[in-house]
Length: 66
Image 1: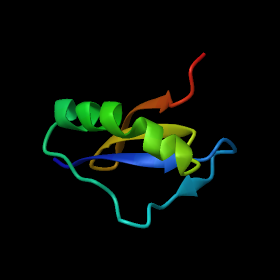
Image 2 (image 1 turned 90 degrees about the vertical axis):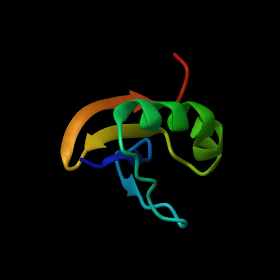
Image 3 (image 1 turned 180 degrees about the horizontal axis):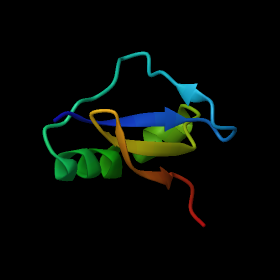
Image 4 (image 1 turned 90 degrees about the horizontal axis):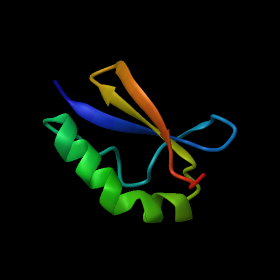
């Protein structure tokens, strides 16, 4: 299993990061990483992320408060 985040703009367009997609061996590591990186992602135009286990959607999450 490979855990990744899919990055999306406010309109749902998928954003491909210039430095590639981070891969994690477990859900906890993926969630810790997004907790550390969400401000940078917001600055790069990412409004929402979707946690994936291989290709299976686990959950979507807004990076904006509220």
